[in-house]
Amino acid sequence: MRAIIIGCGRVGARVAAELDSRGENVTVIDTSQRAFGRLPTTFKGETVRGSGTDEDVLRGAGAEQADVVMALTEGDNRNALAAQLAKHRFGVPRVIAKINDPLRGETYRALGLETICRTIILGDALVTAAIEGAEATNGFVEPPTAQPLTGAPAVPSAEDTQPEATVLQPGDGREGAL
Amino acid sequence: MYVVIIGGGTVGYHLTKELLAAGHEVVVIEEDPARARLIADELGSIVIANDGCEGRYQAEAGMGRADVVAAVTGDDAVNLAASQVAKMRFNVPRAIARVNDPKHDDLFRQLAIDETVSPTRAILGVIEHEIPIHDLLHLAELEGGEVQIVEAQLDAESPVIGRELRELDLPEGSTIALVIRDDRAHSPRSDTRLRAGDKLLAVTSAGDESQLRSLLIGE
Image (cartoon, rainbow over all chains, first blue to last red; front, side, top):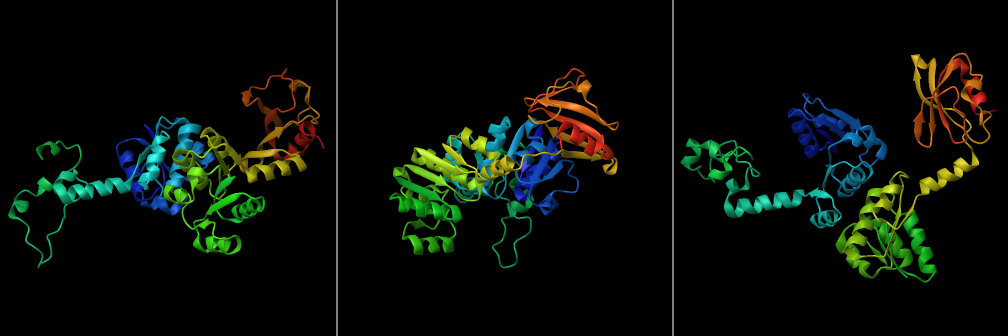
Protein backbone atom coordinates (compact mmCIF):
# COMPACT_ATOMS: atom_id res chain seq x y z
CA MET A 1 0.00 0.00 0.00
CA ARG A 2 1.19 3.50 -0.82
CA ALA A 3 0.18 6.00 1.84
CA ILE A 4 0.67 9.77 1.93
CA ILE A 5 0.48 11.45 5.31
CA ILE A 6 0.00 15.23 5.26
CA GLY A 7 1.23 16.89 8.44
CA CYS A 8 4.08 15.46 10.49
CA GLY A 9 2.74 16.53 13.87
CA ARG A 10 2.34 14.08 16.73
CA VAL A 11 -0.53 12.25 15.07
CA GLY A 12 0.94 12.31 11.57
CA ALA A 13 4.37 11.14 12.72
CA ARG A 14 2.85 8.32 14.74
CA VAL A 15 0.66 7.08 11.90
CA ALA A 16 3.57 7.33 9.46
CA ALA A 17 5.95 5.45 11.76
CA GLU A 18 3.39 2.75 12.50
CA LEU A 19 2.50 2.14 8.83
CA ASP A 20 6.19 2.19 7.92
CA SER A 21 7.05 -0.38 10.59
CA ARG A 22 4.36 -2.62 9.13
CA GLY A 23 6.12 -2.53 5.79
CA GLU A 24 3.84 -0.06 3.99
CA ASN A 25 5.19 2.50 1.54
CA VAL A 26 4.84 5.85 3.33
CA THR A 27 5.47 9.44 2.23
CA VAL A 28 5.09 12.27 4.75
CA ILE A 29 4.50 15.89 3.73
CA ASP A 30 5.09 18.87 6.00
CA THR A 31 5.93 22.53 5.47
CA SER A 32 8.54 22.39 8.21
CA GLN A 33 11.73 20.37 7.89
CA ARG A 34 11.97 20.25 11.68
CA ALA A 35 8.66 18.41 11.91
CA PHE A 36 10.29 15.35 10.33
CA GLY A 37 12.38 15.12 13.51
CA ARG A 38 9.31 13.52 15.11
CA LEU A 39 9.80 10.45 12.92
CA PRO A 40 11.84 7.62 14.44
CA THR A 41 15.36 7.12 13.11
CA THR A 42 14.23 3.73 11.80
CA PHE A 43 11.70 5.38 9.44
CA LYS A 44 12.31 4.09 5.91
CA GLY A 45 9.67 6.13 4.09
CA GLU A 46 10.05 9.41 2.24
CA THR A 47 9.64 12.96 3.47
CA VAL A 48 8.55 15.81 1.22
CA ARG A 49 8.81 19.41 2.34
CA GLY A 50 5.91 21.52 1.13
CA SER A 51 2.24 22.21 1.57
CA GLY A 52 -0.28 19.40 1.20
CA THR A 53 -2.71 21.93 -0.26
CA ASP A 54 -0.39 22.47 -3.24
CA GLU A 55 -1.26 20.26 -6.20
CA ASP A 56 2.36 20.17 -7.39
CA VAL A 57 3.61 19.06 -3.98
CA LEU A 58 1.00 16.30 -3.83
CA ARG A 59 1.91 15.13 -7.32
CA GLY A 60 5.60 15.14 -6.37
CA ALA A 61 4.77 13.03 -3.33
CA GLY A 62 3.17 10.43 -5.61
CA ALA A 63 -0.53 11.27 -5.14
CA GLU A 64 -1.33 9.80 -8.54
CA GLN A 65 -0.26 6.35 -7.34
CA ALA A 66 -1.40 6.63 -3.72
CA ASP A 67 -3.87 4.15 -2.22
CA VAL A 68 -4.59 6.28 0.79
CA VAL A 69 -4.06 9.93 1.73
CA MET A 70 -4.53 11.19 5.27
CA ALA A 71 -4.66 14.92 5.98
CA LEU A 72 -3.56 15.26 9.61
CA THR A 73 -2.30 18.84 10.04
CA GLU A 74 -3.49 21.05 12.90
CA GLY A 75 -5.78 23.04 10.59
CA ASP A 76 -9.25 21.72 9.78
CA ASN A 77 -9.56 23.91 6.69
CA ARG A 78 -6.16 22.88 5.38
CA ASN A 79 -6.99 19.23 5.92
CA ALA A 80 -10.30 19.62 4.12
CA LEU A 81 -8.66 21.33 1.15
CA ALA A 82 -5.80 18.82 0.93
CA ALA A 83 -8.19 15.88 1.22
CA GLN A 84 -10.50 17.21 -1.46
CA LEU A 85 -7.53 17.81 -3.77
CA ALA A 86 -6.41 14.21 -3.26
CA LYS A 87 -9.91 12.84 -3.79
CA HIS A 88 -11.11 14.97 -6.69
CA ARG A 89 -7.95 15.98 -8.54
CA PHE A 90 -5.91 12.80 -8.08
CA GLY A 91 -8.69 10.25 -7.65
CA VAL A 92 -7.07 8.70 -4.57
CA PRO A 93 -9.31 5.75 -3.59
CA ARG A 94 -9.27 6.42 0.14
CA VAL A 95 -8.91 9.84 1.70
CA ILE A 96 -9.28 10.67 5.38
CA ALA A 97 -9.24 14.18 6.84
CA LYS A 98 -8.73 15.05 10.49
CA ILE A 99 -11.46 17.59 11.26
CA ASN A 100 -11.44 18.54 14.92
CA ASP A 101 -14.60 20.65 14.81
CA PRO A 102 -17.41 18.05 14.99
CA LEU A 103 -19.95 20.29 13.20
CA ARG A 104 -17.63 20.96 10.31
CA GLY A 105 -16.82 17.25 10.22
CA GLU A 106 -20.51 16.61 9.68
CA THR A 107 -20.57 19.04 6.77
CA TYR A 108 -17.62 17.34 5.11
CA ARG A 109 -19.08 13.89 5.62
CA ALA A 110 -22.19 15.13 3.86
CA LEU A 111 -19.86 16.18 1.04
CA GLY A 112 -18.54 12.63 0.79
CA LEU A 113 -15.31 13.01 2.76
CA GLU A 114 -14.17 10.49 5.36
CA THR A 115 -13.33 12.42 8.52
CA ILE A 116 -11.89 11.64 11.93
CA CYS A 117 -12.48 13.90 14.90
CA ARG A 118 -10.14 13.98 17.88
CA THR A 119 -12.76 15.82 19.93
CA ILE A 120 -15.33 13.05 19.50
CA ILE A 121 -12.85 10.19 20.05
CA LEU A 122 -11.43 11.75 23.21
CA GLY A 123 -14.80 12.83 24.49
CA ASP A 124 -16.35 9.40 23.97
CA ALA A 125 -13.38 7.61 25.55
CA LEU A 126 -13.51 9.82 28.63
CA VAL A 127 -17.27 9.50 29.05
CA THR A 128 -16.93 5.71 28.77
CA ALA A 129 -14.06 5.78 31.28
CA ALA A 130 -16.17 7.78 33.73
CA ILE A 131 -19.33 5.71 33.39
CA GLU A 132 -18.16 2.18 32.61
CA GLY A 133 -14.58 2.26 33.88
CA ALA A 134 -11.33 2.80 32.01
CA GLU A 135 -11.12 -0.84 30.96
CA ALA A 136 -14.22 -0.45 28.83
CA THR A 137 -12.51 2.12 26.61
CA ASN A 138 -10.55 -0.53 24.75
CA GLY A 139 -7.17 0.91 25.58
CA PHE A 140 -8.04 4.55 24.77
CA VAL A 141 -7.40 5.41 28.41
CA GLU A 142 -3.97 4.21 29.49
CA PRO A 143 -3.47 2.73 32.93
CA PRO A 144 -0.74 4.26 35.11
CA THR A 145 2.66 2.63 34.85
CA ALA A 146 3.98 3.81 38.25
CA GLN A 147 2.71 3.23 41.77
CA PRO A 148 0.76 6.17 43.19
CA LEU A 149 2.78 8.51 45.43
CA THR A 150 2.54 8.00 49.16
CA GLY A 151 -0.58 9.51 50.56
CA ALA A 152 -2.65 8.53 47.55
CA PRO A 153 -5.30 5.85 47.97
CA ALA A 154 -3.84 2.34 47.96
CA VAL A 155 -4.09 0.28 44.80
CA PRO A 156 -6.38 -2.75 45.18
CA SER A 157 -4.28 -5.85 45.64
CA ALA A 158 -5.84 -7.54 42.61
CA GLU A 159 -3.98 -4.98 40.45
CA ASP A 160 -0.65 -6.26 41.75
CA THR A 161 -1.33 -9.85 40.93
CA GLN A 162 -2.87 -9.30 37.47
CA PRO A 163 -1.39 -6.08 36.10
CA GLU A 164 -1.81 -7.17 32.48
CA ALA A 165 -5.57 -7.19 32.86
CA THR A 166 -5.67 -3.41 32.46
CA VAL A 167 -3.18 -3.17 29.62
CA LEU A 168 -5.40 -3.54 26.62
CA GLN A 169 -4.43 -3.35 22.99
CA PRO A 170 -7.13 -3.25 20.37
CA GLY A 171 -7.22 -6.50 18.44
CA ASP A 172 -5.39 -8.64 20.95
CA GLY A 173 -8.46 -10.76 21.44
CA ARG A 174 -8.91 -9.97 25.09
CA GLU A 175 -11.67 -7.37 24.70
CA GLY A 176 -14.20 -10.20 24.68
CA ALA A 177 -13.20 -11.18 28.19
CA LEU A 178 -14.55 -7.89 29.45
CA MET B 1 -29.01 42.04 -2.43
CA TYR B 2 -27.82 40.56 0.82
CA VAL B 3 -24.13 39.69 0.70
CA VAL B 4 -22.02 37.99 3.37
CA ILE B 5 -18.31 38.59 3.01
CA ILE B 6 -15.80 36.23 4.60
CA GLY B 7 -12.54 38.04 5.31
CA GLY B 8 -12.06 41.71 6.09
CA GLY B 9 -8.61 42.13 4.59
CA THR B 10 -7.90 44.70 1.91
CA VAL B 11 -10.09 42.95 -0.66
CA GLY B 12 -12.94 42.31 1.80
CA TYR B 13 -12.84 45.87 3.10
CA HIS B 14 -13.00 47.57 -0.28
CA LEU B 15 -15.59 45.10 -1.53
CA THR B 16 -17.78 45.88 1.48
CA LYS B 17 -17.38 49.60 0.96
CA GLU B 18 -18.32 49.40 -2.72
CA LEU B 19 -21.30 47.14 -2.09
CA LEU B 20 -22.61 49.42 0.67
CA ALA B 21 -22.21 52.44 -1.60
CA ALA B 22 -24.22 50.62 -4.26
CA GLY B 23 -27.04 50.17 -1.76
CA HIS B 24 -26.57 46.48 -0.92
CA GLU B 25 -26.91 44.95 2.51
CA VAL B 26 -23.56 43.56 3.71
CA VAL B 27 -22.18 41.68 6.70
CA VAL B 28 -18.47 40.91 7.05
CA ILE B 29 -17.04 38.05 9.11
CA GLU B 30 -13.43 38.78 10.06
CA GLU B 31 -11.49 36.63 12.49
CA ASP B 32 -8.90 39.17 13.63
CA PRO B 33 -10.59 41.34 16.31
CA ALA B 34 -8.37 44.37 15.69
CA ARG B 35 -9.08 44.29 11.98
CA ALA B 36 -12.80 43.76 12.65
CA ARG B 37 -12.88 46.80 14.97
CA LEU B 38 -11.14 48.93 12.35
CA ILE B 39 -13.79 48.07 9.73
CA ALA B 40 -16.64 48.55 12.21
CA ASP B 41 -15.29 51.99 13.20
CA GLU B 42 -15.35 53.07 9.59
CA LEU B 43 -18.34 51.28 8.09
CA GLY B 44 -20.62 50.66 11.08
CA SER B 45 -21.63 47.61 13.07
CA ILE B 46 -21.75 45.19 10.16
CA VAL B 47 -18.80 43.09 11.32
CA ILE B 48 -18.76 39.78 13.18
CA ALA B 49 -15.37 39.23 14.74
CA ASN B 50 -15.07 35.49 14.44
CA ASP B 51 -14.22 32.46 12.32
CA GLY B 52 -16.18 32.71 9.08
CA CYS B 53 -15.92 28.96 8.45
CA GLU B 54 -18.00 28.13 11.50
CA GLY B 55 -21.67 27.50 11.01
CA ARG B 56 -22.79 29.37 14.11
CA TYR B 57 -21.10 32.61 13.05
CA GLN B 58 -22.46 32.22 9.56
CA ALA B 59 -25.90 31.79 11.16
CA GLU B 60 -25.27 34.93 13.20
CA ALA B 61 -24.45 36.73 9.97
CA GLY B 62 -27.81 35.67 8.57
CA MET B 63 -26.33 33.32 5.98
CA GLY B 64 -29.71 31.62 5.67
CA ARG B 65 -31.13 34.59 3.81
CA ALA B 66 -27.96 35.63 1.96
CA ASP B 67 -28.12 35.91 -1.82
CA VAL B 68 -24.37 35.74 -2.19
CA VAL B 69 -21.42 34.67 -0.07
CA ALA B 70 -18.02 36.02 -1.11
CA ALA B 71 -15.04 34.32 0.56
CA VAL B 72 -12.12 36.62 -0.13
CA THR B 73 -9.41 35.89 2.46
CA GLY B 74 -5.81 35.30 1.46
CA ASP B 75 -6.11 31.66 2.48
CA ASP B 76 -7.63 29.27 -0.08
CA ALA B 77 -8.41 26.65 2.57
CA VAL B 78 -10.51 29.18 4.48
CA ASN B 79 -12.26 30.39 1.32
CA LEU B 80 -13.16 26.86 0.30
CA ALA B 81 -14.33 25.80 3.77
CA ALA B 82 -16.44 28.95 4.27
CA SER B 83 -18.05 28.59 0.84
CA GLN B 84 -18.77 24.90 1.35
CA VAL B 85 -20.33 25.45 4.78
CA ALA B 86 -22.45 28.31 3.40
CA LYS B 87 -23.68 26.23 0.48
CA MET B 88 -24.18 22.98 2.37
CA ARG B 89 -25.75 24.24 5.57
CA PHE B 90 -27.42 27.45 4.49
CA ASN B 91 -28.17 26.73 0.82
CA VAL B 92 -26.75 30.06 -0.27
CA PRO B 93 -27.59 30.32 -3.97
CA ARG B 94 -24.30 31.83 -5.04
CA ALA B 95 -20.81 31.33 -3.62
CA ILE B 96 -17.88 33.32 -4.92
CA ALA B 97 -14.39 32.40 -3.76
CA ARG B 98 -11.08 34.13 -4.15
CA VAL B 99 -8.49 31.62 -5.32
CA ASN B 100 -4.91 32.55 -4.53
CA ASP B 101 -3.21 29.45 -5.93
CA PRO B 102 -4.44 29.37 -9.55
CA LYS B 103 -4.19 25.58 -9.54
CA HIS B 104 -7.05 25.42 -7.01
CA ASP B 105 -9.38 26.94 -9.58
CA ASP B 106 -10.47 23.64 -11.12
CA LEU B 107 -11.00 21.97 -7.75
CA PHE B 108 -13.16 24.83 -6.45
CA ARG B 109 -15.37 24.69 -9.54
CA GLN B 110 -15.57 20.92 -9.33
CA LEU B 111 -16.79 21.36 -5.74
CA ALA B 112 -19.70 23.54 -6.86
CA ILE B 113 -18.28 26.93 -5.95
CA ASP B 114 -20.21 29.08 -8.43
CA GLU B 115 -17.55 31.64 -9.23
CA THR B 116 -13.84 31.77 -8.59
CA VAL B 117 -11.69 34.84 -8.90
CA SER B 118 -7.95 34.40 -9.12
CA PRO B 119 -5.92 37.60 -8.77
CA THR B 120 -2.75 35.59 -9.38
CA ARG B 121 -4.05 34.29 -12.69
CA ALA B 122 -5.37 37.69 -13.71
CA ILE B 123 -2.02 39.36 -13.11
CA LEU B 124 -0.19 36.46 -14.74
CA GLY B 125 -2.41 36.85 -17.80
CA VAL B 126 -1.60 40.54 -18.05
CA ILE B 127 2.14 39.94 -17.69
CA GLU B 128 2.21 37.12 -20.22
CA HIS B 129 0.17 39.19 -22.63
CA GLU B 130 2.49 42.16 -22.27
CA ILE B 131 5.72 40.20 -22.35
CA PRO B 132 5.48 37.19 -24.62
CA ILE B 133 7.83 34.47 -23.46
CA HIS B 134 10.49 34.52 -26.11
CA ASP B 135 13.04 32.36 -24.47
CA LEU B 136 14.02 28.83 -23.76
CA LEU B 137 12.81 27.45 -20.49
CA HIS B 138 15.55 25.67 -18.56
CA LEU B 139 14.27 22.38 -17.22
CA ALA B 140 17.44 20.71 -15.97
CA GLU B 141 21.16 20.86 -16.28
CA LEU B 142 23.63 18.01 -16.56
CA GLU B 143 27.41 17.76 -16.31
CA GLY B 144 27.61 20.78 -14.01
CA GLY B 145 25.70 22.96 -16.45
CA GLU B 146 27.64 22.02 -19.57
CA VAL B 147 24.59 20.21 -20.93
CA GLN B 148 21.13 21.76 -20.69
CA ILE B 149 17.65 20.33 -21.09
CA VAL B 150 15.44 23.13 -22.35
CA GLU B 151 11.91 23.64 -23.53
CA ALA B 152 10.93 25.84 -26.46
CA GLN B 153 7.31 26.84 -26.89
CA LEU B 154 6.62 27.55 -30.55
CA ASP B 155 4.25 30.37 -31.33
CA ALA B 156 3.04 31.52 -34.74
CA GLU B 157 6.11 33.72 -35.15
CA SER B 158 8.60 30.91 -34.71
CA PRO B 159 10.79 30.53 -37.82
CA VAL B 160 10.38 26.73 -37.80
CA ILE B 161 6.57 26.59 -38.07
CA GLY B 162 5.53 24.39 -40.99
CA ARG B 163 8.94 22.83 -41.38
CA GLU B 164 9.84 19.20 -40.86
CA LEU B 165 12.37 18.29 -38.20
CA ARG B 166 14.86 16.98 -40.79
CA GLU B 167 14.95 20.44 -42.36
CA LEU B 168 16.16 22.06 -39.15
CA ASP B 169 19.75 23.15 -39.15
CA LEU B 170 20.38 22.17 -35.53
CA PRO B 171 23.67 23.15 -33.92
CA GLU B 172 26.20 20.31 -33.57
CA GLY B 173 25.65 19.87 -29.82
CA SER B 174 21.84 19.99 -29.83
CA THR B 175 19.10 17.48 -30.40
CA ILE B 176 15.31 17.54 -30.21
CA ALA B 177 14.34 14.93 -27.64
CA LEU B 178 10.57 15.22 -27.54
CA VAL B 179 7.68 16.99 -29.23
CA ILE B 180 4.76 17.83 -26.96
CA ARG B 181 1.56 18.47 -28.89
CA ASP B 182 -1.94 18.80 -27.37
CA ASP B 183 -0.53 17.75 -23.97
CA ARG B 184 0.84 14.51 -25.38
CA ALA B 185 4.43 13.51 -25.88
CA HIS B 186 5.52 12.37 -29.32
CA SER B 187 8.86 10.91 -30.36
CA PRO B 188 10.48 13.28 -32.79
CA ARG B 189 10.55 11.84 -36.30
CA SER B 190 12.42 13.27 -39.22
CA ASP B 191 9.06 14.00 -40.91
CA THR B 192 7.39 15.61 -37.87
CA ARG B 193 6.03 18.92 -39.16
CA LEU B 194 6.12 21.64 -36.51
CA ARG B 195 3.03 23.64 -35.61
CA ALA B 196 2.34 26.71 -33.50
CA GLY B 197 1.59 25.57 -29.94
CA ASP B 198 4.09 22.71 -30.06
CA LYS B 199 6.57 22.43 -27.24
CA LEU B 200 9.97 21.00 -28.01
CA LEU B 201 12.23 19.50 -25.40
CA ALA B 202 15.81 19.79 -26.50
CA VAL B 203 19.12 18.66 -25.09
CA THR B 204 21.92 21.06 -25.91
CA SER B 205 25.48 21.90 -25.02
CA ALA B 206 25.52 25.16 -23.12
CA GLY B 207 27.66 26.71 -25.85
CA ASP B 208 25.08 25.97 -28.55
CA GLU B 209 22.11 27.31 -26.64
CA SER B 210 21.91 30.76 -28.19
CA GLN B 211 22.09 29.30 -31.70
CA LEU B 212 19.29 26.87 -30.78
CA ARG B 213 17.19 29.74 -29.41
CA SER B 214 17.53 31.76 -32.63
CA LEU B 215 16.63 28.71 -34.70
CA LEU B 216 13.50 27.73 -32.75
CA ILE B 217 12.18 30.99 -31.36
CA GLY B 218 13.74 33.67 -33.53
CA GLU B 219 15.59 36.80 -32.61
